Length: 217
Image 1 (tube, one colour):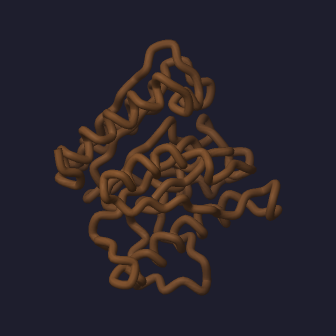
Image 2: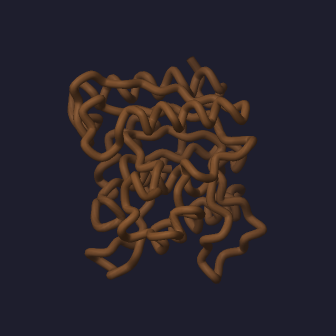
């Protein structure tokens, strides 16, 4: 499941079309998730997260009809979309009122492209999230059972500091889970959208998915 980036303000599902086509060719079912954003729906980041969780619940509820493995849902996304993928696991409190919360919205693995993972006072988005960062921010809600994760980041990212990614990795490992962090020298935010980094990150994601037995060698 791919969640596009855009600061919860905009963006398009076309961002991850190359990735979706790559995985469809490898016998995955790939989903390009749309969700509410400020420019099109005049909504807040909280509605974006509600939609992301609703999407995962929809797949699980209809797993048999859609012929998917409900226990092997990979959440993936870039920037704010990466936040949504991670926050679907870390957040319990923000849900669409019409959702059946008995159905888990937690992904089983994460493939994150320069994700927004810290919404605290020194992180990204605090001016919009405010004190609710305590529930909204993945960094502040890492818990035992966190899914295996791969994390791509450019060392010149102007929104997500390398130190933030390293702290995230450490906190995940402290609860006994796995986080593979790959740093790309001198690359900025969104570097993975263009070659050669598009192909490089997909190949590393493939190796990661093979290592957790989601993808055949």
